[in-house]
Length: 239
Image 1 (cartoon, rainbow, N blue to C red):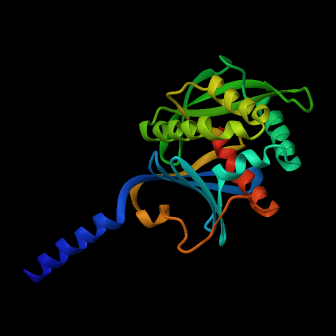
Image 2 (image 1 turned 135 degrees about the vertical axis):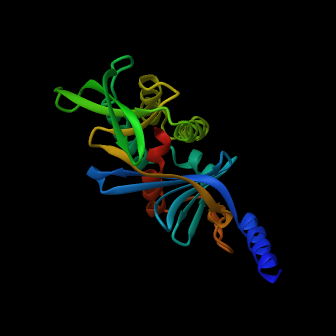
Image 3 (image 1 turned 30 degrees about the vertical axis):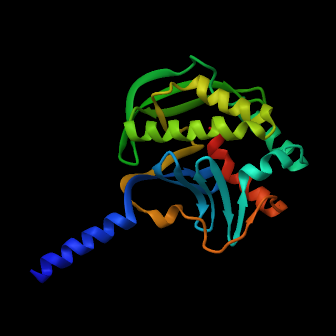
């Protein structure tokens, strides 16, 4: 009886501290970068590139946590949109958007590939390198995995609501290129050698992962260091 009571108590505590969600990790080999997305629901998402460097999305708010520094993204985005560093990064994003395959250019190969345990179909596309003017082949693996598609659509909704403030042209071009070139019901498992999904799991996530650091003051204007970190974190949202 005591053992049964202990199990019931443990199960009850688990329900209070963890909730089913999903976790995905993307690797960007050329940038030596890993992006982890922890998704509880559309109102609770954590995007990190380091354990202490992450975006915490608690709709309708977005916070950036950079070590012990917490910044309210909604409060500062209008204030910094004309800063030089934002214009510079927007220009780079604009250039990258030109390397996305044009709409209707994806050609199914009829071959399949498994990435992080998920099967996808291999597509081929030819793009024009905006810097060299040369044609380049892109091999892209796409999947209709329902949970990955759900995650992509949630990220896209956040992007639509929030990224347009940051020098609309560059970020909007990247977002539009991704949306126009890839169907809404697929998710990218691998994009050439640029990035690929390295891990995916549906799992219980501790609710504490989606709480702001205790007793941390919330800033309304980032430092240059904070802003640089934010732009690194913002890249997944522009997709």
